[in-house]
Image: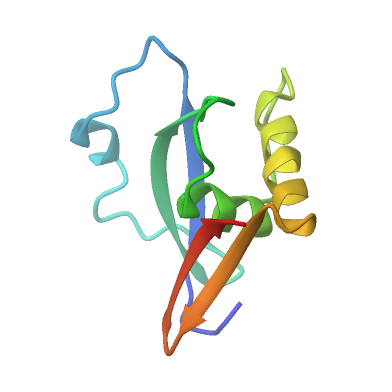
Length: 104
């Protein structure tokens, strides 16, 4: 990580929790850090296997360190997305400072 980069904390919500701005309220103004890097929360739903893999999930899977996953659902999904990248099914493109993902 770069000295100015942050740590993205991916929080996967259970189906019974509504994903609203209010989830971020406790984090606003908090100066939480890991190894000197600011922690930024991102609340998401688990992606469906039928959905195309988005750039968000591709980026998350490449850099993910799963901290808590008692049912191994997120860990398995991260592995699936990583395999899609490794096998060339999902390809990262860059132009200048921009990057995006496409299916091969």
